[in-house]
Length: 300
Image (cartoon, rainbow, N blue to C red; front, side):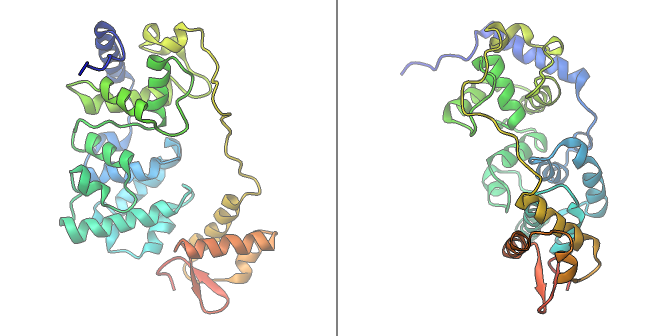
């Protein structure tokens, strides 16, 4: 059996590792989950950072960790309190899953976030990416961590294309595995993520500040435009997501059950409003209270 072709010549691969890691040493943002790399801190940050910018996560993360510094502290609270504390981060089902994961951690792991991939994947809300991130950032494991930023860096620098595929492919995962350095794999994961977040950005890459611009195959090819499916931004105005957000805001701000009339007042389209309210109940983010009131879970 022949060995797989390396993604870059050995000298270039060495330079890629050294240049990215050296750049990260001086350019890394001072983020709280990098100062506190305990497993629970990393886990909370990863749940919050899914599809949410760092700037919005920072205040919610700080308040969350102050209130619930351990999985046991969160598990002891009603699920509705987790949803309330989630605030306006969006996708509040993440709060339910994080609460459920904390409960499992207490019941099955003595209150300590597990460190094996299999045990992490068994936790509610933890998929391949989150498990790899916890393994890497909390336990300094040699895991392949592939978020949107990392994938974009590898697509441009190594594959020579503007954007990666919509979903992670087997070839992409094999490439990321081949690029993983033998030493400092956890720092490599954080560094490539940072490079994509602040330099090799989706819309306006700052190539003049890139530590590996000389190795970038997309740059060398003249920045060819993306030739795959059109990449569309997510609409917001008038969507079900916006409607659900308005309803949840009313419920979060109330100390207890909210009359249906208060929810009716925040969204004019009755059919859409009822559909979204039904969806929130089905998702267990909202509980009916009697015939005409609603509350966050456990807030009756």
